[in-house]
Amino acid sequence: MNFQTHSVLDAHIHYDNPALMPDLIEILDHSQIGKFNIVCTPHTNRLSLVPDALHLKAHYPERVYVFGGLDISGLFTAPAACGVYFAGYLDKLVQMGCDGVKMIEGKPDMRRMLSIPAFDSPAYAPYWAKMEEMSLPLIFHVNDPEEFWDPVLIPDWAKRQGWFYGDGSYVSNEVQYSEVLNLLHRHPGLKVIFAHFFFLSNQLPRLSDYLDEFPNMHIDLTPGIEMYYAFARNPDVARDFFLKYQDRILFGTDIGAKGLLAGGGIDPVDSQIRVDLVRSFLEKEGEFRVVSGQGFLMEKFAGPFQGINLPASVLEKIYHTNFERLAGEHPSPLNPDAIIQECQRLAAVIPAMGAARPGEQADPSVAEMVSHYFREQKGA
Image 1 (cartoon, rainbow, N blue to C red):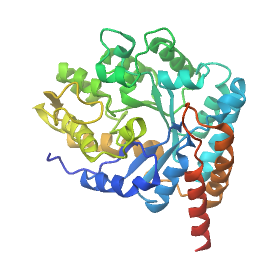
Image 2: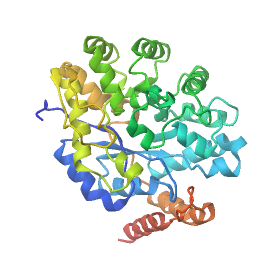
Image 3: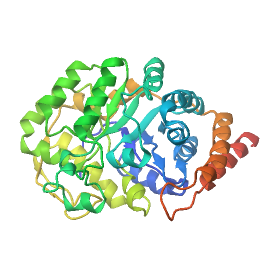
Image 4: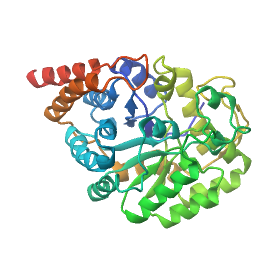
């Protein structure tokens, strides 16, 4: 598809193995995405994907931002004091060269698997205070589409992923919204970006109230395909929302999510569909379609979608300046000594922690490889 010429920064990309570097860069170059942000999530047999992301950043230091994930081992060793551990880990992330923090801990299946305490509980309090004090930007995945709790409305593809949450064993979405709003009241300086439009694309008046109440709250456009069904139902209302909150919305695609959830690396077809969907929605006027029947988690609805044809000045904010205001115009520099130290620690901790899922093997190999890479670079 043909799009306007803009500097585009993708704020939400997943990357789970250094072997994928050539594929990712080729996809982003083809999609005319310049700078991009790797969001790191916990990994079931490698504990952390931060080493992968920092290794990528070492190869493209002016292009790659990294929002590091928390070391979830603190949830197992001392869950009631996890916030103290996480607060200390923030210093380590910054020392290594991370530009912010990514939390997927609000995704209901992740929260159940890790037995995560309530986000507004005393267990987390030291962490939120430290995040606010350091003014670190946070990309926070809280909840999932509301239909995932409804046995009638949940789509088949979500069931296949194990994302039906209505059996009583998962946290409810409204409980999590309540917890997160409580912590925003306590920490109004927290710079937070709620992924996937905070899963409130179908409730824009409610989302508008939150954005008005919390001036440091932001949202990203990463599909959640349901977001674009909701926008298509009333594109004039959606356009008005985007114009009003043009300083609070960030471009993102979730490129790489398929590899995390289904394996198989980074899919160029899925990646291009994501870019085309989001950019067409922002730039085009009237109906548009994306490739039908392809793309990871995209098969439910091929269109027509509805574009909202935003002005170029608004697109510039969504495409890059809103993110740069929060995380900096340039990525933070790396600290090889701190990276080596953390990779060596992970390589020792991963076998002791084991794999999070039965049948998997704990795998410290990437942490060991990245440690070796940075030691070689220091000696070069």
